[in-house]
Length: 485
Image (cartoon, rainbow, N blue to C red):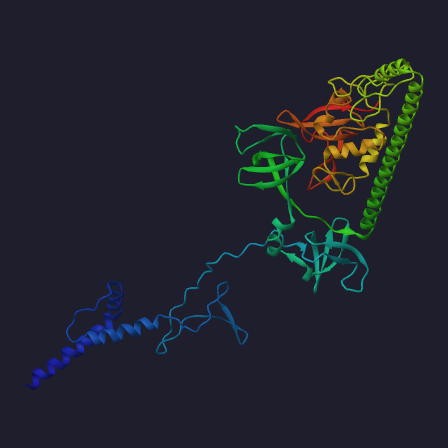
């Protein structure tokens, strides 16, 4: 019995030593398979062993894991952060984790500031509220940031360079969010001419052709097409393959520029007031003249009545003859009359009597085309208002030309279509300052401008640009008319 007991003890010791030699392999197998090893009476011991071995390969849950650099400083010595030792054993080196997140790219507006002031923020000569004011950055206007000094940034916008407190600006990604609110997208044509279509299709009707190197406001866009405003009520789609879309913001205004703009507006308003006074005087003179003519006719009629019924009858016939001829007044040549030249226009070419509304026509009056162009340029920058005719408060294209020529005693019809039938038709290539240039959409004239020379025109373009100057061929001209001799 004693011998059998010794044999059993030796056998048990052998089994325990076997676990020590092959333990790592057993742990690996249990981890891989995920089940207990079926050894009678040994399951609990095996579970304990696996737990210890697994823990020995784990790092301290409170250890700091660096993403970019796994090295820390300890008493001036570089020490690599590693796993925690178990029972004094040296742990295996911990594999450094790699950063999985991609750094956010810098905003393309990182050096751009957009004013978020209620109205405007002052631009100062130096970074202090006591410094001289050199300009203003109105709400929604943008500036390039060139330097930062504490709570201030140095900016450049337009012709102005100075300092603004950062709190008044949206910068970087904050600025990007304001593009749709304050930025204007422009499409610049990158080909010689480009078709503007009614719909987003190469099969759609062509409304007009626009010129290369000109820019047009983008009303909306997608990946392939941009809807642009050409002028007035003409807008359509162009392929984005042939345009470059950019975003523009209003710029800062210097104190000198603001004062000059105030002087320009005052001069324009005074010019319009003088024009209104002149028109009122002319109307008063016409009324007086009509009153005198009516009084003279009444006096003549009274004398005829006193001379007998036969003379009265003769007077009626003469009166009827003198009033014939499209409402013309009696001339000095024995009652002959000349037809009215246009819609209230003065007679041109010495009163030749040719109608100004035909295909050929004649000029409506004499004048200096350069003086007309120069006068028209005084109103550049003033607003566009559909249906308006005020050179200062707002006008559309035909209201603009009508008001400009009215200053020089030439009365044009109200619409661009009617104006395109006045004066004398000329080649577009022969246009000179003071001539009218017309544009069409779908074969119908819908825009008019005044030639100012050098291949350019001045016109009331659209609500965004107002009265402005453009290349005469910013869109394909329909025809040109000369209304002054």
